[in-house]
Image (cartoon, rainbow, N blue to C red; front, side, top):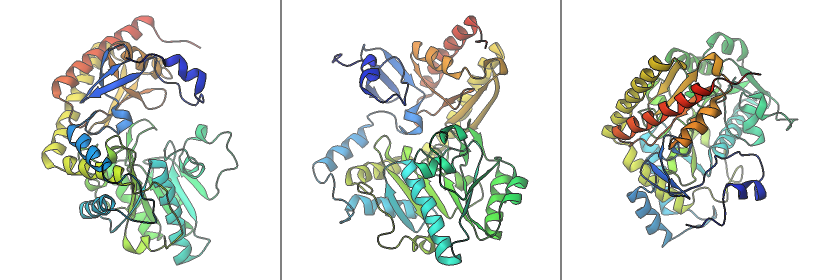
Length: 408
């Protein structure tokens, strides 16, 4: 194993905007990962809800190898067969008529927000440009998407940010009704606020948002970067919420680990992205689209999606059992295999300690802010692997509890 680079190398040569864990994974198979020293981990993080079929899924590897021997890249001067097939599949499986491909969730959201404003400009004029989003939302790290996101800490130091964006509390329909007007071009919502603490939109709220958008001729933009492609037990979360968006963004799990994103919309709205209005050098890359097509082929299966619901309950039951023994969680929430466990008040601000302790026990997991443990594993994780991972989590929790909460 090549150990000429290690965790210290990161601090020497990388910009310090990340603080990766004190080990370097080098190989993965299914839900297991091995580091430079050959130590094994169970992966409950899924690359932040990306590795929807685990690591090195044989069918994805096969498709990638086949496409790599044909075409890697063409640019948007030409189209390609994998992109066209993937767009056909996405439109056949969703509300959408048209697809725009990008490389990341932030890029898909950037395109969505630009399209919403352009559509309103084309049909109503420049005054109708307000975008309303929700407090604690997260939509990406570009200047536009971080401005739409509802967390001030991600905007601090980058001002002035794009104007015409307002935020209201999540799951508060009265607050939205007070803020929305005929100046509003779009309301942007995550079906589950992922980075904001794994907080689901309740169904009545989501339906009320859709109604308010219709009343004010505003577009409903659903950010399904984290919830899409089977994560909640449906192909896309909106399908179980009783609403249909005008624009939807999808990324993360769409490529199963290969970078790809898409913005989906209707034909009427898509017309505002006329020739030359937006673009991406790598968007619709043949390699990415070939892999994503295979991901959808596997995930869009009733039996697999039903399994997600079953595995959700297994997680909740076992996390609840831990809580009965240790009284560490104030709430366990989420849908499908996007689950958040909020720590009790004495442990607020200390979620990272549990993340590090879990790593030491051979478990990779996530946090969603400083007080929520987050789990987003492969959708095809075995029940036995869930149970083993939860056992390792409990050992990590016991270690942190024995050390006691940090005090100011």
